[in-house]
Image (cartoon, rainbow, N blue to C red):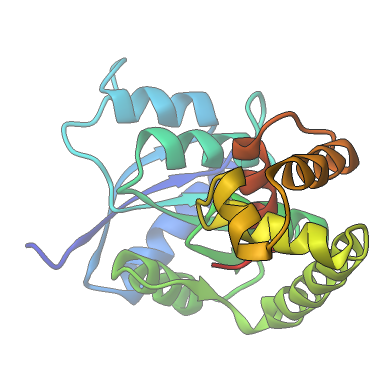
Amino acid sequence: MDDIIKVITVDDHPLILSGVTAALEKNSRNIKVIGTASTAEEMMNMLSGLGPRGLHELPDVILLDLMLPGMQGEEAAKILKKDYPSIKILVFSAETSENVIYRLLQIGIDGFVNKTSAGREIAAAVECVGSGNQYFGMDTARILENVHVAKGHKCKEMCSMFSDREMDVMRLCCEGFLSKEIADKLDISPRTVDNHKRNIFQKLGINSSLELVKYALTNDIIKL
């Protein structure tokens, strides 16, 4: 039974819950739905073992709708990634705007499948993420491409804020060098390095080198 992928489905529409459960088990012998929830809060209680529907084992995959009463699916995904990193998150939604997809990618979801997909595709998506891979259906390929292009434009716009020397200082900060070491590498004084860092901090609205590293890496301004 080690190859069985244990799944929880989360959706506030009873017909969708029952339909998806039936479709998953009909289209794959490797999938077992061990629980369903109509809200994110109910799902969290199940995972923690609270309430009458608490689970004795964690699922491998959570098939998660975004539009839920109470806590929304996007917020639930953030909590899941933090508190249950071993669980794969497959978002199951008809909401396919570029902004939403971008935010979900930032959270680190493992896949996205459209609610209009056939049962066999949903099952294939669950098997894919349950095996440790990512799944994004053909209907989201264009959206992902647009997100990638938009992110590239954003990076270029942000990089244009800085001088070449500021970019050098930022890169070396991200590589872990201290001000004196950066000064030696760039053949400038430590005071000049600190002035460059101060200018960078002001442009980004941050206050420390740690914040600078996080900001630069998160926004792909610098790649190690």
